[in-house]
Image (cartoon, rainbow, N blue to C red):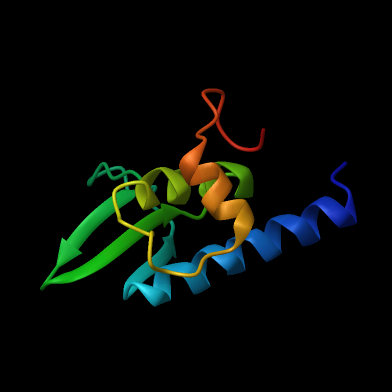
Length: 100
């Protein structure tokens, strides 16, 4: 059974990622991607010039965080203030995924 502290940390980290995305005008959309007629998976896309990260809401929060961090690696964050834990994961990716 998950611990309350772990759930709080995960929620806090997802909020940090949303805040960080907003600084670059990136929208993060959590959606149910289970439509059998249109196979879709989490990822990055650009719609009408706007950056969008679509994340399957059925995935575990840790997997959602991992997906967002992997997509963030495509962008330059050098002159943008981001939470230290995000910068650490962007600069030192873990081969086994998130969390370390």
